[in-house]
Amino acid sequence: MAVTGRPTLRDLFDESPTPHIAHPPRTHHRHFYVATDGSYRPNGGGLGVVIETRDGERVARIAFQDVAPNNNISEYRALHLGLDVLAHRAPPGARVGVLVDHDDLAANVNNAVLAGDHPDWKSPKRIVVPTGSEHHWRGIQARIAGFGEVRAARIDSRENPAHPLANSPREYEHVNRKPDRCVLPEPLGFESDNDVSYLPPSRCEGHASDD
Image 1: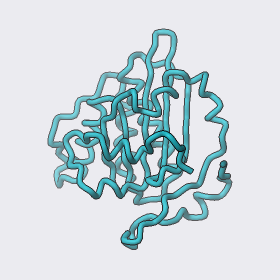
Image 2: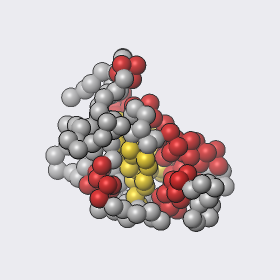
Image 3: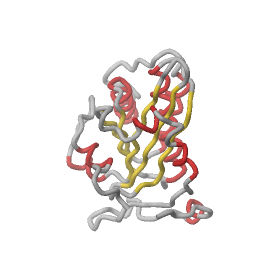
Image 4: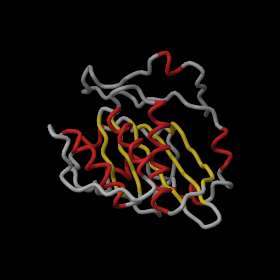
């Protein structure tokens, strides 16, 4: 159930720019949205992840303590984590909207998507990955390739629901103890037969739903 009083990830995504890639009406047809944030502090930081269906149903919320060398690496780690978690919840072919408050990361994700659609795997813009983030970027690329469609939007950190989770991971530690959810968006009447409308049994077994 969507939380009353705050915008859904879909609303935030639809109102935000998607660097280097078109933002057509089809954007509204994502199946899942994942917002991530990484926090860096000299004495420690954190990773935050929020995942919702397009209907605003919460799939997962994560707040981990993490020590990264710098903020750039923490942002890449957070997105890598978020896409890994979503990949274990979502069926093949899911269309995904990514929300991050890091300009270069959003641009790199969209450039990687465009490169995947190019016959020679060429990105329209040069992709520069921060030193130390190479491993996480390879993981992000692998997850991008595994979904049906991916598009990244750049949002303000003040609007990013993953921001408080990353900045105060101890305060939000309780969210990690909630059971996994097996949630899918309500099917649209005009979706094709190839669109996702259910989870295979293997995906649902052992996943309890919370209120």
